[in-house]
Structures are given as structure tokens and as C-alpha cells.
Length: 252
Ligand code: G3P
Ligand code: MG
Image (cartoon, rainbow, N blue to C red; front, side, top):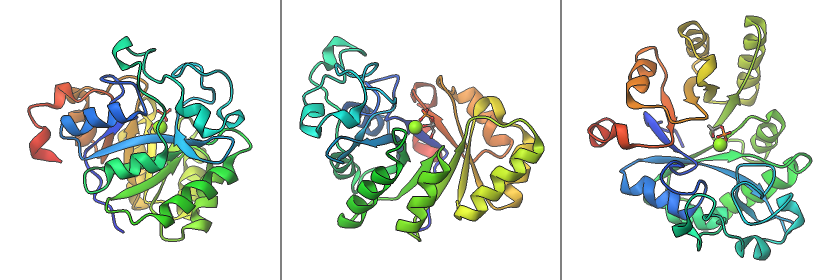
């Protein structure tokens, strides 16, 4: 399936408006008329893919330690909302399956492969099996900072759309190697931290027909987004759509 990447993608749902990587965060994305969201996926002890950004449960849930030490039924009991706001105390870390059901016929999804170290293979196996089992009525693509995860996914799903994520590199020579990795993996996109982006970099990626996406640790406001689109960025991950409100209906 060829993807029409939108100009903006909700980051972990829309993580400034509701607890990240939860159904509440996805609901906010829909409410604000976003057409795509991104989520981070790893697996439980019983290999159920579910949403969690960090290596540990501690920051965004009431749990402690590595998620692969817990069955999903134990993870389901965790509070994944109170850290954000007490009113979200009944919110839990959802399974990827529940999230796909939510997105179906409604909103595109970027599934970031975010395995705990050593769980790359199990993570990709569980996610690819789930995707194959479901009849998805929605556009989707996989991304990862982890080359090995993308390589595994490419083998499991030869026709899947893949995006490589990059958070640092030092020299032009290394950029050339990263671009070569994308070509080897048949990626359609490459994602950079906003600190790395510049016109020359974008040009090098475009020459290889790679779509360029940009993410940040903090929200990318509409004013900044306008500059990024002008220099050739295709898509931007945002945490808060408020500053995009007046244009949201027109440009996606
Ligand atoms: O894919 C963009 C973004 O999600 C990558 O960074 O750390 O928020 O997963 P992170
Ligand atoms: Mg992510």
C-alpha cells in the first residue's frame, strides 16, 4: 500500500493533551481532526504488543521495571494516566490490537518498533503476526531507531512501508551510511530529530527518494512547522495541535 504521508502526525497520540500512548490520547487526536498518529510498541512477558515509550514502566504507569517481566493482564491493571492528570486515573496501557481497532476506518497509524534490548525479534514477530491476522482498513507504516528491528520486519513483511529514525550523527560520511541503510531496507522515509535538520540534509535524502519526517522532544509549533515544510520536510510529529487549529481542516 502506498502511503500519502500527511503534513502532521500526532506524537504518541497527542501527548501534551492526554497521557501518551493511551486511548485517551488517540481520542484527542481524532477530536482535533488529525489524520495520522504515532505510537510506540513493545511486548509483555506473554508477547502481547502494547503501547509504552520508555524502557521501563515507571515514568508513565503505576508499574515498576521492565515490561517483559509482566503478563499483559498485569499491565492492563496499571494506571497509565494519573502521572499526567488525576482525571485520567482509569486509563491503562492499551494493546496494539485495541489501538488498531480504534484506528480502523478512522486514522492512519505509524507503529514505532520500540523493543526492550534483547526483545527485538519477539517484538517484530508479535507485531507482524497481529498485523497479518487483522484486516486493516487504515493506512499504516512501521518505523524504528533500531536497524535490526527494521531488518526483521522487512523479512517478515516484504511489502511493508518502513521508516528509519535517526537521533544523531556526526559527519556527512555517516549520513551517507545512514541513507545507504535506508536503501538496503527499502525504507520510504527517514526521520530526524529537529536539532539535526537542515536544507542540505533534506536534499541528500530527497535525491534518494526518501520522504523526510521530523520529530522533537517538545511540541513543534505551527510557525516552526511552516519553516520546516518550506525547506522540504514532508511530515512533522506534533504533541499539541492547538496552534494548527485554523488550518487543520485544509491542509492534511
Ligand atoms: O517517530 C518519531 C518519534 O516518536 C521518535 O521519538 O522518542 O518520541 O519515540 P520518540
Ligand atoms: Mg515514538
